[in-house]
Amino acid sequence: MPEWILLRPAWLLALPPLAWLVWRLYRGGMTGSPWHRWIDRRLVRHVVADPAAGRRPRLALATALAALAAVTALTGPAWERAPQPLFRGDSALVIVLDLSRSMDVEDVAPSRVARARLKLADLLARSPADQVGLVVYTANAFTVAPLTADTATLTLLLPALSSAIMPSQGSHPSLGLEKAAELLDQAGLRRGELLLVTDSAGGPETRELVARLAARGLVTSVLAVGTAEGGPIPLADGSLLRDRQGRIVMPTLDEAALRRLAAAGEGRFARLSADDSDLDHLLAPLEGRAPRAAIEAEARGADWLDRGPWLVLALLPLALLAFRRGVLAAVGVVALIPALVGLALVGLPGTALAASADTLAREWQAVAAYRDGRWPEAAALLEGLDSERAQYNRGNALARLGDYPGALAAWDQVLARNPEHADAAYNHALVSALLAAADRQADADGADADGADADGEGDGEGAAGDARGDAAAGMGDTPGDRMGGAAAAARAALEETESLAASDDPQAQTDPAGGRLLPELSSAMDEPSGDFAADLLEQRLARAEGDPAELLRRRFELLYRRQQRDQDGNPTWPGDVAQPW
Image (cartoon, rainbow, N blue to C red; front, side):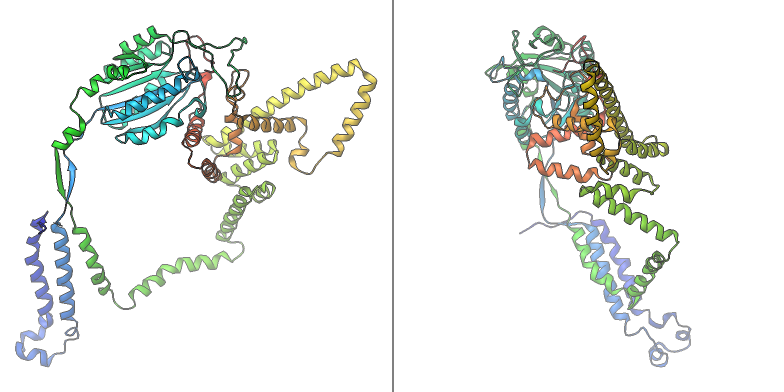
């Protein structure tokens, strides 16, 4: 037989006063009339008419049922128990994994990053802490998973982790450790364990950081991956990564520096091994505590499930009876009056409401045209609209057409109104940089052409005449065709960056001058921020088809563009701020 209990039985004290109110409602009748003072109570109902006499019993019954249901719900009836752990462990471990290109070295078979993934899978299978988080880093740090007790999900994400999913390159372990500390702070934990899996100790700032974290109660241990001999970094096309001087890069493992880093963080150091001796040493402080499952099994209770809220549903039919006939219809008519007036005003020419409706309709038409690739139509629909949003979207449409000066002018209007508009500022800086690069390229081509004319003046005149004729014949009607050589060169440069962004070669995606990564430039034009960004992002995520690596790469790319911080501003290896590995 199920056990019943009332979680809040004190609400039963409300039943006597409610019963008295119901009785007064039922017997009230003519007591409020002055005639009952002069006429006998047995005769008053026959002498004076009572219009509410027929409704009073039904109203009293409905009120009694509603009061009984409400009081019963407030008492909290319960007849089922739900098991609940009375103990929750607070041990936390955040894994900080290095995904720089040096982790692709094959001095430990099959590669450093592959061995690190296998070792982390063994670590997660041992469930060393109550909560485990995962952070990856290169020149920027990203959260793969916050603190969670679901280690099975983390294990499923491990095969997707590689240097190819990272939007930037370099090795900055201090950023990864800072991100790990943020995860612990967000979880409200004052103590925790950090496990750095890397082949590089970073610079002095990393040792200073782990010392500060240790003073806060965050212990940093190190799992070193690699060998002292090192090895070359293989690229996707089978070649080996070289530095700017053309020498093959050979990252080695500085075990002494990593040991000093672990000592500064008051943690433990281990070198990756084929057996579990490294994990036994690193996880000894965590596994020395009482097992989480055993503690929870001994300290579990059962909470009563409050079923009172379900009784509120019984009040809904009674609430419907409380409405008078025609009241809902009257309320609906009154509520529709403003909308009906607005619809009437929309058709009146010259009114502000009609103008607003027309503007909104044009913006929606422009959005649809942009999404269908009809950029001339989108730009034409947005022309003449003075809102900040319309000017920003018009600039995006003009940039798609190749009308870069027009796009810059539209974004200038946006920035003049709102200097904090980050998307317009980013697109403006991007197109300006492309035009500047195109101008430099055009100047260089002009210098080469002058040299060629000096070598052969006669042939040069004929070639120039043919070129002028071809240029005149090739003039189109699109804004991009009327812009001139610099803008056309900028458009060609943009298409070149898009083709480079689609390449799988990490070296091809790096600026030869050691500058920003080209995928950031191309994706900013391929995914314009603002009203159109959500649809394009949804399309790209749909193309990912559930591939964890692709999803992580897209997510990290978006976060990287928001951070607006690349390897030029972050020291990677001591003395070298632009090392792309």
